[in-house]
Image (cartoon, rainbow, N blue to C red; front, side, top):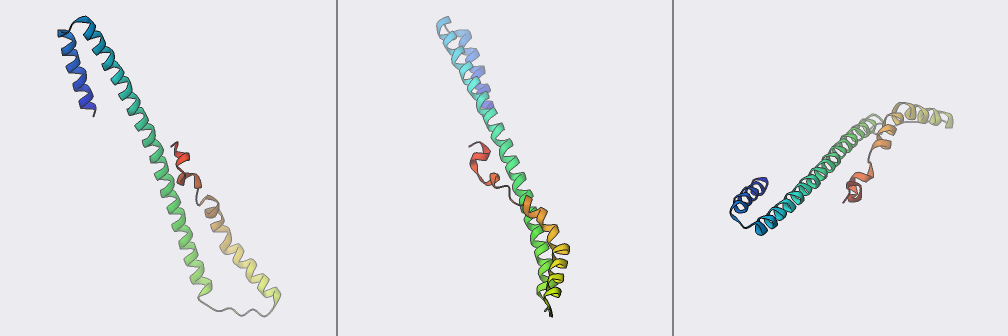
Length: 128
């Protein structure tokens, strides 16, 4: 579109040089209005592009976190749910639970806290 705008500007310059002063002034004002509006369109498009790029980056980061959490879940599932456990007492169950929490739960808590910034899925957060 920029070449079209530039073409209009150059044609208007030629027309103004051959036109009566009243028409030339009006043409100059109209071309300046068009250029101002075009600059505003370009700036708006740039801002939207920045916001969309940021949203895409956030979404990719979220998908990466989800993939890490899924890998962790697969590891835990493979390590603990594919074998049977025999627990003989309440104390032994509490010990196993505490051991599991220390070794397996602390890692994904960070992932869960940072997992999905919900605002990236809401158009209002993008200024729309």
